[in-house]
Length: 294
Image (cartoon, rainbow, N blue to C red):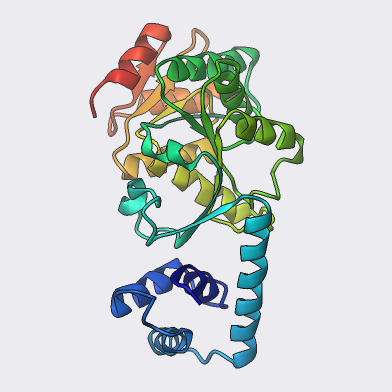
């Protein structure tokens, strides 16, 4: 069993998460010399749990199934010890011990900007999501978004329409596209040399908590974050909060009418005196925002 398989197996054991896997790696320095038995004993010691042999066997079986699925579907398994693992995630308190990458993983080396917003944008919001994504792609900057309904969808579409590159960060496995209505969009992203990225194995279904986890990855992978339209609560605000914690610059779209529900979050952010949100009223503002040194 190689290091990747050991990391996957540990992660599939009940009550063992990314922090524990990283702790085990730090203790042993590497996973090549340590046997799975060694790793299991260490996990039992630091977690103060008794792992039954049936649970270990089930984790190994699941690992085998996932490795086979990834090989069949051209999904790269990227663990935290791999060279391709994004250094941008280093600031996370708990980094995912594994990422599943389908498509052009080299995009992760680029400057990335996230374009995000409400699932129920106005017509003007939809157009801004597309237009600003096109500007990014014209400058050779891949667009990061979450493949959700609304602003995310139009951000990805804007990138594709300009023959640019885009990365979809998923709240589910790469073979369980959510929402299902965006399966064709996900395939278009791959067809145009883009990337689907998830910390969940390809067969894993979406759950509510995974949306917030997805939001933190969008913020951490991106050099900057741009908010198209957002209400007062929702996934966009989660991403903004994560961006603040990581000291990422956040641009916020400005509209003539800021009083409608889809833009009340924009107004709140722009009036926040504790964080320097960048107001973007037009294309020139946006170009200043994306080119301003961080």
